[in-house]
Amino acid sequence: MTMLNETHNPALQSWMASANTPGTDFPLQNLPFAVFRRPGAGEAFRCGVAIGDQIVDLAAVAHSGVLAGEAAAAAQAGAQDKLNALMALGTSAWSALRLALSRALREGAAEQAALQACLVPQAEVAYDVPARIGDYTDFYTSVHHASNIGKLFRPDNPLLPNYKWVPIGYHGRASSIGVSGQQFRRPIGQTLPPGADAPSLGPCKRLDLELELGIFVGSGNALGEPVPITRAEDHVFGICLLNDWSARDIQAWEYQPLGPFLSKNFATTVSPWVVTLEALAPYRVAFTRPEGDPQPMAYLDSAANRAEGAFDIQLQVGLQTPKMREAGQPDASICRTTYRHAYWTVAQMLTHHTVNGCNLQPGDLLGSGTLSGPTLDQAGALIELTAGGKNPIVLPNGEQRTWLEDGDSVVLRGWCEREGAARIGFGECVGKVLPARP
Ligand code: MN
Image (cartoon, rainbow, N blue to C red):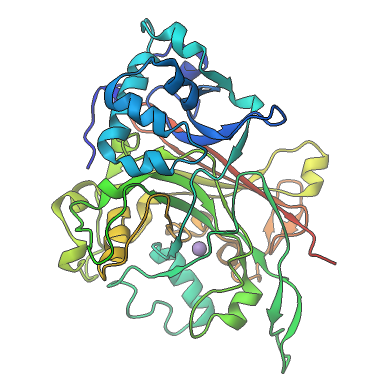
């Protein structure tokens, strides 16, 4: 578990002025990773680190020789077109690179001139999915989401008996994961319309979003070797925003007995920026279980996990309709919550995933599951916000939505703030619904 160190000092200022602007997502204390290039210039994708409104180009840093030792080796791994090589190096390398960049980007640093030559403005770049994602697993770690969904399908028995014992998940699909800016066609699939006696094939009529976080695996584990919870976070590179778009009508018809399939695998959108667990250290909070609930089984329990295994990450969902876009209106907030409400922690997810010997690999992605909080305004999906499509939400311009319509954009945002620490952010995760294929 990462301890606080000099890189978290809220008093640190950068020679890059935009990193010191109050409210920026990317101050000196954050230093998240992405994969980027300037489009149209024939450039290759490479890894970079955000500082204010700029990107530190790790390929340029590696070439410049400005860093030394383990940090230089980490920057060299970051010269590749995906984060996998850097992810595979492990916590010591990630931490060495963070410390070296933190020092070199500080006001008065001797490396200023050398690093200035390695900066690329964020406004000029296009991003790619940050890692080569071998496998994607989506969990279900919000008990509030599980209960709300359960009530719609099983009013008498909303929460299945396994929920409070085992972190529920299913294997998703990696090929359709796209980076922020992703646009996708409304999926076509089999549904059983209400009252019909046979299913039909057609465009999804109940298209939804899911507010989630994505957890990127760093160093992997060998097949057959479980990761104990005390070591679980050593295998986590960082966290991004994730929208697990969902076709609820397709899901309702197909999900039994093996779980979601085509209702989920047509598109998943992640934010370009991955915030490291080290950057998130100041925002750790205790993992707690409501009184009367089963306590975690021994393999899912540790003193550190109880003391600070959860993260207080603020989350928001915005929706922009085509009408709002045409009128120049920004997206409207439809949900505001925090990750601290999750029932299972990052460490518990990773440990459970490997308890049977399953091997995780660098770049694998774990979805948190929809992160609904305890009250309705904290629900991270339309199926909850509209009670299964019964109560439309009303947007500031008077438009209503029960499900997503063609042309709608969804924006996820995340940030951390607390007294005595710098505010850091995740940037945005934006995706847009296009009409179904004719
Ligand atoms: Mn999901």
